[in-house]
Length: 352
Image (cartoon, rainbow, N blue to C red; front, side, top):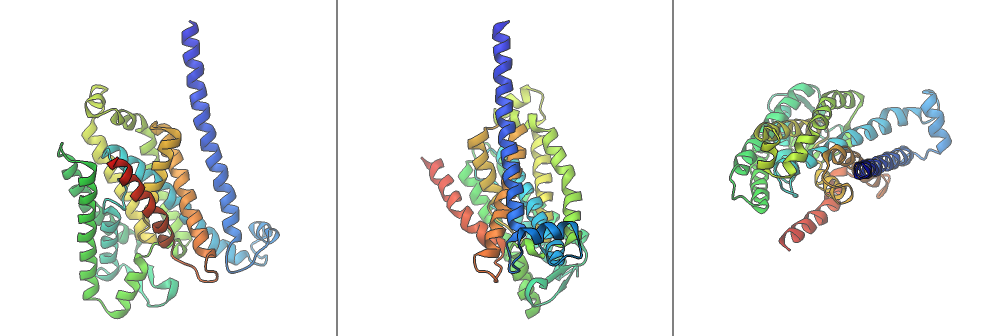
C-alpha cells in the first residue's frame, strides 16, 4: 500500500511540475504582450495603453486596436500552431529536424497561395509597402495553400514509409521539395507583371503586420479544432514515441494517426502561410527546447510547445519592430537568424 501511495505521490509531483512550467510560460507570454503593445514608432506610455484599452476614443487607441493588437494576436496564433506543428511532425516522422519549414511544406503552401493570388485572382496586388498583397478571397487562398502543402506531405509520407530512411535523408527530401516549390513560384513570377513579382516577393516574407481583425478571426476559428484534435490524441503520440510496434500493440492505428497528424499540421501551416507568408524555424525551435525541459509526454509537450512558439514569434516581431525603428522588418528575417544556428546545432548533435 505504501508503494502505491509513493507512486501516486510521485506522479502528482510530476504533473504539478509540468503544470507549473505551463503557467510560467503563460505568465511570460502575458508580460511580453504588454511590452509588445508599448513597443513601436508611436511612443505610448503605460497610462496611454491602459486608457486606450478601456476607451476607444482615447489618444493612441486607434494605433493599439487597429494595428498593434491584431498584429500581436496574429503572432500568438501563428506561433502556437507552428510550435504544435513541429511537435507533431517530429513525433510522427521520428525526426528531430522535422517542421513545416524544414520539410518544404510551408514552401508548398506558399506556392499554392501565390498561385491563388496571381492566377486565380484571390488577391488584390499593389506594389507599395504593407498593402503589397491584399487577400480578398481568403477561403480560396487557404484552399490553394493547403493543396500546395498537401503535395509536399504526400511526398514526405511516401519517403517516410521506407524503413531504412534516416533523418538526414528526410531533411534532404525536404530540401528537394523546397527547391521544387520555389521553382514553381518563380515560374509564376516569370509570367507575372513587374508589380505582381514585387508584390509576391514582398508577400513571401513572413510578416504578422499585414494581419487585420478579419484575418485573426479566420485563423482562430480554423485552428481551434486542430488544437482540440491534437490534445485528444496526445496519448497516441506518446505511444508512437515508444516505437511503431509498441504503439500497434497498444491498439493505436499508427498509419491513420500519422496521416491525420500530417494533414492537419499541413492545414494549419497553410492557413498561416496564406495570411502571413512564410515564417521559418519557429516550429523547429519551440518543440526542441521543450522536449529538453518537459520531456516527451505530449499532454504537456503540445501546450508548452504552443506557448513557447507564441513567445518566440511575438518576441521576434517585437525585435523586428524596435531594432531599426521606425523601420519595421519582416519577422521572418528575425526567426531565420534565430533558427539557423539551432538547426545547425541539432545536425551536429545528431552526427555525434
